[in-house]
Amino acid sequence: MTKEMEFFSFLLEQYAFFKKTTADKILNKLDALNLTERVFNMYEMYHSEAIENAFADIDSMIKDATIKN
Figure 1 (cartoon, rainbow, N blue to C red):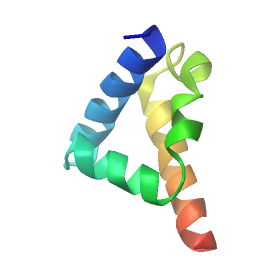
Figure 2: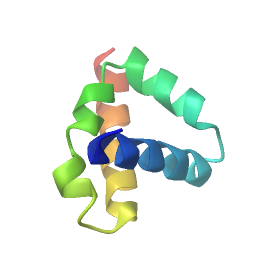
Figure 3: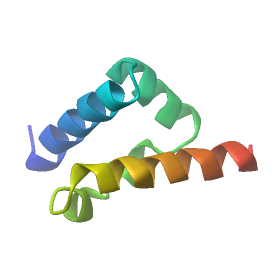
């Protein structure tokens, strides 16, 4: 498993805990909104800053994508 995939898995688990849900539900939501690849590709930024910043960014992406759909 690549370091990016390991971090993505960690991020999903932590974000799910933060949102009081499961990683599967988070992944399904990201998939439905076509955000999975975008979040995965944010590895360089997300792994080097406070994880709460990643959570805020993901919240914003989900909100924006939900409004567009």
